Each structure stands twice: as structure tokens, then as C-alpha cells.
Image 1 (cartoon, rainbow, N blue to C red):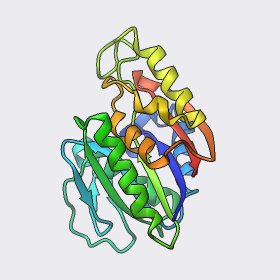
Image 2 (spheres, rainbow, N blue to C red; image 1 turned 180 degrees about the horizontal axis):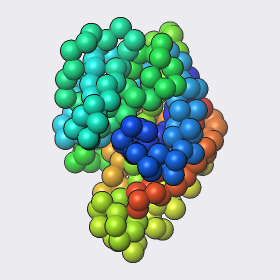
Image 3 (cartoon, rainbow, N blue to C red; image 1 turned 30 degrees about the vertical axis):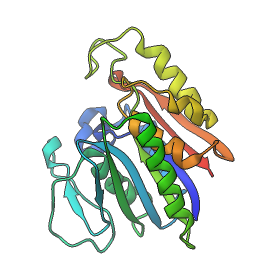
Image 4 (spheres, helix red, strand yellow; image 1 turned 180 degrees about the vertical axis):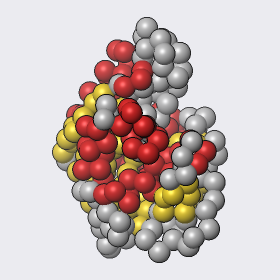
Length: 228
């Protein structure tokens, strides 16, 4: 049974040990992400984007060492000590689990960044059917960024058309507009995850709540909660 959907960015800068002096600048986004994830039950399925399709089970531990600081994460409280390489979406999901609900167990579904819209929607519908077949409550954590081209120093470079694109994405997420997510262009870094969300939520959630929208360092971040 799908009980709640939390939407957060996939942002190493929200991890204080990685952010350094910038930690205070993104404190509101970090607090919102933790608050959104705290609304999920003890069983999570995280949805993110990576280089290849994969399912990462909850008995997994990783580290942010590749991002400059050895911050360990776990996808479950009883994950064994061995650390493996994980995509960013899984690392952030594990870190967020530790902050929001250390008792939770999180499986991560990673979808290839090149997945087309129709396939992403189909993945979302299949995931919803899988969750609906489970009697216990399941929460979904969507870990995805918006455009990364909003300012000249942005990691993707600067695109003058990115600002209206990001505004439209933020508004769609705030309103639960799954139709708008279906039409997202490749310029949205987390496009595939958002389109899996659209398939998962069908015609839209019963309620959608925005906690924060922001674009530090030229990357669009949205945090919110959808009630299915």
C-alpha cells in the first residue's frame, strides 16, 4: 500500500560534512528534505537516476568518499559493514534515511538517464502495481534535481531558457501535475525519476504540498510531499 511520496533533490551539498561553509546557506533545503522523508513509513522505495538500471537492496552500505569526505551511509539499520560503490541517488537516500528515520529500510530503484518518457511512465505504473500488492505501508522517495543550467557558474553551464523550465517544473511538482511531468525535456537532470513518479501517481496525487523550492549554485531543487 502506497502511503506517501516524498520529493527531494539529489544534492551532496545538503550533507553538512560535504558542504563545509556552504552548509548554513542550504540549511532550509536540508531541513525540508529531512522533514519530507520523515513522513514516510518504515519501508521506503527510493527512485533515482543513474548510469544504468539497477535495484539496490536495503542490506547495503556506501560512502560519500568520492565526493571528498568519507561520510558513511546505510540503507537499513542492520546493513553489513562492507561498503560498495553506489550512485548518488542511493547515497543521498541512505543519508536522508539516517537523518529522518534511522529505523527505516530503503530499497533503491535506479533508472538509466537515457530512458525515454514512455518507458519511464511504464516503470512507474509497474512499481505502483507492485506496491499496491503489499499490505503494509510503503513510502516512495523521489531523489531528483531539476535544471542544472540556471546561472553562468552552474555545473551544466548557462541556458537562458532554463529559468522558465525550472519554474514550470516547480509548479507542476507543487500542484501534483503528472501530465506536465510526462512532457519534461532532457534538460531536467532528474527527468526520468520525475516521469517514473508520473506513472506511479497516475492522474495525480490526492494532495500535494510544497516545502521549499530553490536554486542554489544554479541547480533547481524542489522538496515536497504527495499524498496518493
